[in-house]
Image (cartoon, rainbow, N blue to C red; front, side):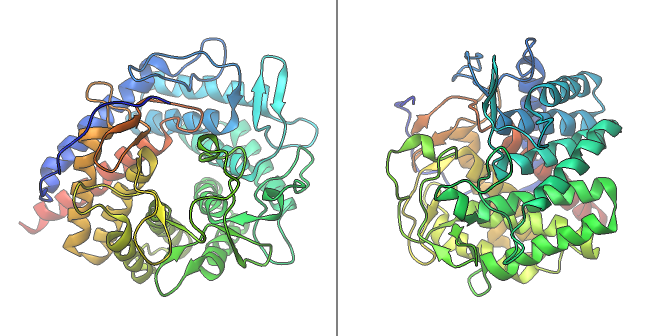
Length: 430
């Protein structure tokens, strides 16, 4: 992991100027689109996922489901948004590779990773199944491809065949035949999994408009709210037992954080991810709009989520959002990763939209200022992986097997849409 010498002074106070910020985010969206248009497609099949600090493709022996589906989502979303045939062709390239190499033709679902010889890790991690559903739904929406729609339906049905009928929800890790793995992770449920299944179910139900799919979306939304989110403080937990009793989190193999430590126990006891809370807030808004036709129905909860982040997870000196901390009290991990700060942008804008509270608009502007100054590459526009609290780069690579443009592209797209609405409202009332 690269360690860099860059550091920063405190970022000055930043005003929320929606017109100027819209211009900046539009430029970022154009730049990050160019990054993926120019270098993402692997002519040998699928997508490149490893990029060094200069955006140069690095060799890889194993391709992961999470990276391939995230990049498929990226090309599908950008291609539809920009009506760009080259981006749609890139999406089709990835879809064909996904079906050919990752699909389990015997048990259905998708392998976790593949290499030149076939499945490298044939497990059906629920995280990967959710992102497969998300990407297939986005691709089918962008292209009208009926085979992608059919595979999305198959994936959705396979996921539900292994739901926990006793308590609800879904297991963290299952094996190639859809049995819970005989590991600590196989007996756990996590906010992370269910948050991303909410996201995938929303996109899938938006594709099919099937009342059964919308009902399943409502069920997972209600489960998240009833079992995984504290109603008073508006924060999610981390890991849970079968009956949703909170558990001390463990480092689970084949997850984002696992590659950084040999410890068995994650830092802290019971922790919350500030950006997962903000991300859940705006994803709830999207689900609410599809289910009930009203993205405002959980405005009070979103307000509490954003207030908690400002109190404990936001850096009021340098700007930006820390990684995680205890439910109450200062953050215990003050590094600033790309994905947390990308999701914080959309989360703070969503909270501002629902509540009109200026503190969320300012938090958005200051998070963007930190990201633009330290995390976002000045000419390639993709985000570096991780920085310290004051902006010193810890990992300055522009892509690994977990990134894939998903958080960064999505933040740019969502923020451009939301800032455009704000600017349009200003013009209408001027």
